Image (cartoon, rainbow, N blue to C red; front, side, top):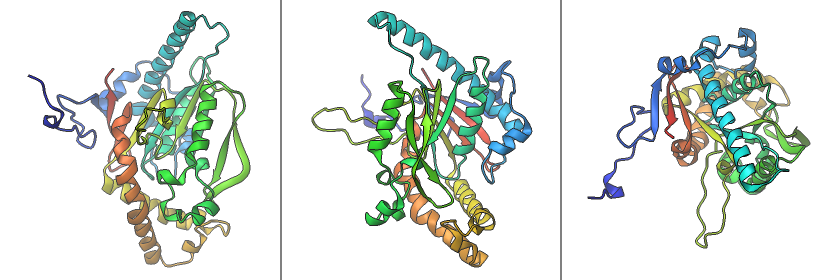
Length: 331
């Protein structure tokens, strides 16, 4: 007797991380996950971790040992397997002049959840493997449309939503990376001016590993009725990670970060948000709450959270901003 799709309950992974009969994930506590690091050496110092972590992110050497060393070891096995498969396919196709393309890791998740910290720590750990691979890190911020275009199209209040990105430029960039082209340009972004920096680029020259970080990198697209190819950003990924936490926690972290920035970066007269440094604390908190509920929460519900089940690995964070559970997709 066959089981109809309507008879199968959806699996909530995470925050209900216990999985289930139909779960595509293996689920581990942070303690269980930490054992998989085996003899992977810790190549970062406490000072380096402090430099790499984002504002209000308490990640320390203990978290690197518990979570990131095992993750680094896992990724090394995937990179090695990818290289073996490449050489096997090269022989199969008799293509002696084909060169290996970068292994691309996508990192997704809400604002304020810790994507940037994860991306930077992973980049440093991977670059310090014994094989000394070349590792580059690119964020999707540079692929946002400039504020002038967002203002013209009435999209400033939807900045970070899929429609606020130049998807064509983003796909052309990843296509060039996967084609093994040298000196590929990635546009850059200023969090001070809250805008793309004109005529300034990050040059990516055939890395062994590229980490590509952004809130909507696992976003899917509507399929065409005629069956033509519709590429998605995630089509270019060899491995994907989603950073997750309960909605209430992300909300708290976002507002806390905004209030901290009000005392630091927003004090700079060149900051796009400088006006919020001059208002009262109560008024600033009200602004942060408005930005969360009217923009970031809507984006989380409509676009970001629905992409979580597409990730190869999900890091679930707890109230202290540290990882409590790891879900790894079954092979």
